[in-house]
Image 1: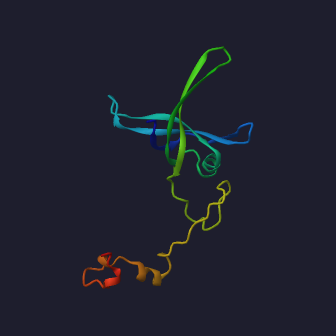
Image 2: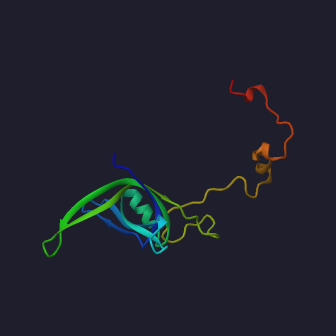
Image 3: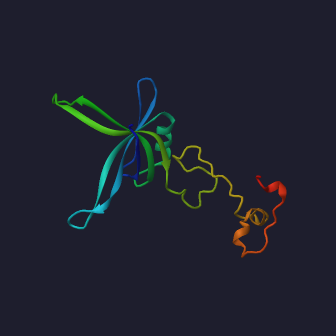
Length: 157
């Protein structure tokens, strides 16, 4: 089984290219902190190259930037090529099947997409600014106790 899950921050702006057939491919590097300190008591990180294809590649370029936090699920891929000197160079990278953007949308953007952020539209939150929705959807168990009204139709058995 070849499966990888990573969470880290981009070390630089993602790069978007297109193949000769017009297929989008995006490359970026994730910095992932190690869960322990070295002998000097310092934190270390690993820098993992990630490759994303097609619509996910275009979304990554539109929504990620240097310093953005992202989660990636994919597989390890190794390849090689010959450089200008004729030496064989091996590359190991993660080919992402799924990229999750973990940074929240900056405050004050409203429903208008920022330049470079594609067609991202904020969904209205039914709990904010609508006292009727808040009263109807609040958790009855957080109200300090008391009887909870349950009809026989609400029971699954």
